[in-house]
Image 1 (tube, one colour):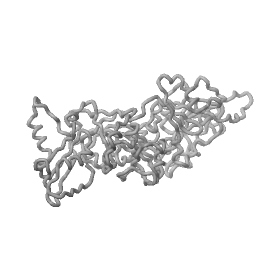
Image 2: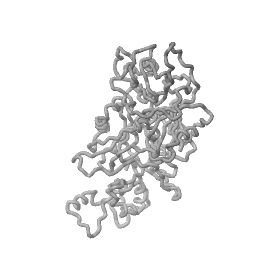
Image 3: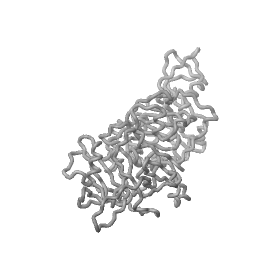
Length: 535
């Protein structure tokens, strides 16, 4: 039960069974019931001896059969093996209603970091509406093996769509063995970019495994932001090693005045306004509504001891809706478009950013539709919004055609710096210049590569041509730097394979934008997360 020791002090040797049962059954998850051993029972009382120890645990709720049902001797024998002669199984109220749930509906689970927290008043125990529940179903009925169980694992990487994997684990295996099995099931690109796996501590859900994937060289603190009970999502972000409640809410994009409780590892009670938490990579920050009933959690080492209760996760939990990620001069913003407003996206962007009286330029980005993910939001579209003054065009040799201004996206997520954008006259850029600016943050034993664009014969240092909205990615690769610094990565850019109409109806190649260095790494960890949601 993960509840520690419970001391009973009573004036006589008998303790009412209902007193013990009501106290301990409070934390029983749906579909489970209380199991008490080594306490002799006489009628409605437990009879205790001085210093006697009893044992309490949760066991799967036994099936309720009608008189017409025939129970096989094998099942009778199996059920009689549960517990001992002096064991007591306590069924919560309404057990007959939940003992045989609809197999298509996974049992809901409650979790608690505060076992001693009193239950909220009845009027505060209203259910929390989750916009989009994770696509979870019961595991397939086929037997994965006598000593194995099929488990889903979700790997969180900052600003990427989470990886969802199906693996087979042996109950009772160690955490390193479980992580090694999960790592072996990953895709090649993701495992090369983010090879380091750490389990979330504690696990935010009991239905599947949650891990954080980071680069080997990263020194930032990557944490899991658990808002499953608030809006049904999970995400990974960076935080300072020491943070208070307001800072954690800010990192999650939530106002400090929101009526929620913030739980951090190793604290059974929510974080108060004057307390700080010392965090490390893999820590899980749970943000729950203040009226949330008590709930239980477990570390991965304890969870993988049990083969029961696992559910199949088919897709990561996301906020529903058609979301557009806007890359602006000030940072990122997100806009949720109702189906009837998608044809008016440009006008809604203008109203959101208050650009009615500002000269601007919009450029769609050629990213895979579900590639950009943050705060539990999967962006269906990514749009560059340029509102900067127009730079002076370069001098053109006599007789040459005037070059237009091309906006393109710089994907710095492989180096944990997020998505940004830049522009180039005629779409001509220098891969060496990009590589050299990024090399300032390149760790020892690695070198910088630039992925994407079309290689050209170098002229005035410009050796790449980018199309409007094309994605240029930057990575740090382990090993000695090759002689041709700034060359293309051997794996050609897959992020720019998807083609789309890169011209909006008002695309003006002469729209303005000032020069800026897109590779300036944020000094404040929260800068990358500065964005607003709009619906």
